[in-house]
Length: 80
Image (cartoon, rainbow, N blue to C red; front, side):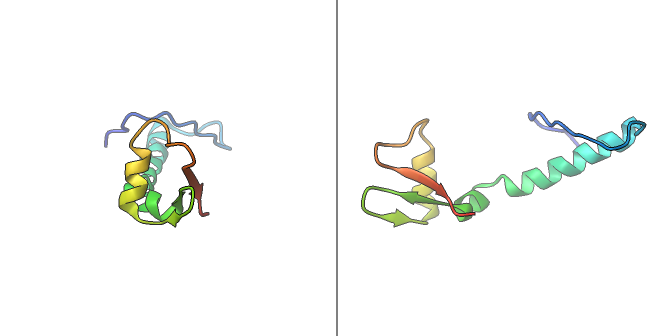
């Protein structure tokens, strides 16, 4: 499995863990992160607050975050 383009810092309690065990841990972490780093989960966890409205519509949230900066008086709120 390819690790993708991400940097992970893995802190372990054991100093003498084999390279194979470390690779297996990193592969498991990558699988978990791949499942939760998708648009559907992102939209469920956030809502978009405009000047006079709050929306949870995924299409509007994704459109707002597609640009590098949010428009004035638009806020992305984490619902967690």
